[in-house]
Amino acid sequence: MEVCITGGSGFIGKRLTAALLARGDQVRSLTRKSAGATGAPQGLSFHPGDLTDPQVALGGFLAGARVLFHCAGEINDAARMRPLHVDGTARLLAAARQQFAAGGQPLHWVQLSSVGAYGPDRRPDRRQPRIVDEETAPAPVGEYEVTKTEADQLVLDAAREGCITCTLLRPANVFGADMPNQSLRSMIAFIRKGLFFYIGPDDVVATYIHVDDVVETLLACGFDPRARGHVFNLSNDCAYGDLVNAIADAAGVRRPRLRLNETLVRRIVALASPFLRLPLTPERIDAMRVRTRYPVTKLQSVLGLAPRREVCDAIRELL
Image (cartoon, rainbow, N blue to C red; front, side, top):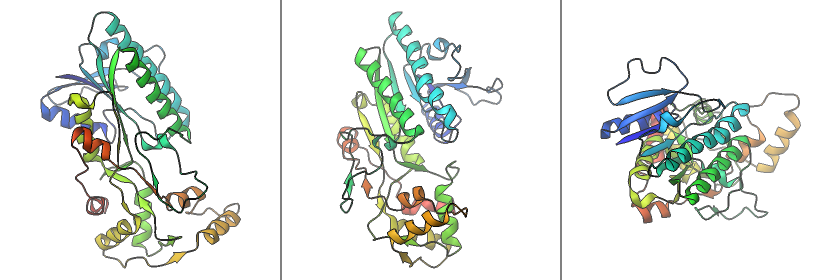
């Protein structure tokens, strides 16, 4: 089958591209690099274009494709997030509408999103776990999360028009050997050095998903007709303490035992941060106190899929 992919050179996209080629698909990847075709494997071609360029022509990129995997994303430069996530998605959708109006069949659009669309836990009483499923209303916070969620809505609106069909996949924190996000590696470094400590009660959830599980689910979203019209969350939640212990065991160091009062730690950070550059920030404390779970019940019910890589086992890749 002829398929298109944006973000094909990224952390998830390059693995998805390899999986598509292994299936025997003809893959067309959008690239900003003029020399992108150099040394390309059989079945892979490159289409020059930048989604942030208002003048870019995308009709040729989508021409003849049955499925689009929209994996392009910006996680570092906030100034590029809206031009890429929102404006770039709108340009792609305009090209898809033009092809449909010219007599083509609706393109099936697989949108790689994020559970960040649901926003942080803002309940007054957070003593009980927060359960987020696909019926939870989006409430994103932060430029990345807000712009990705706006792009999701553009895709859903286009699907309601009938010019495309779509599936949205919202993974939790994606990890793997060459992941670009350094927060998990920072935690590993602190555990190895014996500097890690817990904050607050032992009721925290680690919301991670291995990149290979993401790729497998993306393929199902693209080629299983049962996936069409659905939004799926994807996470392989585990106890935070279990993850910390797994890292310590894999690194051959002592398991962390120290646990500090959350209110005390927050006060110390608030007082010291104006004068010192601390590795611990209010945002990092929030990340260490997550009580949100993302069940994959819908994914299992509709597609019969569930994550296969246990986080506490797969974390060894990062060590």
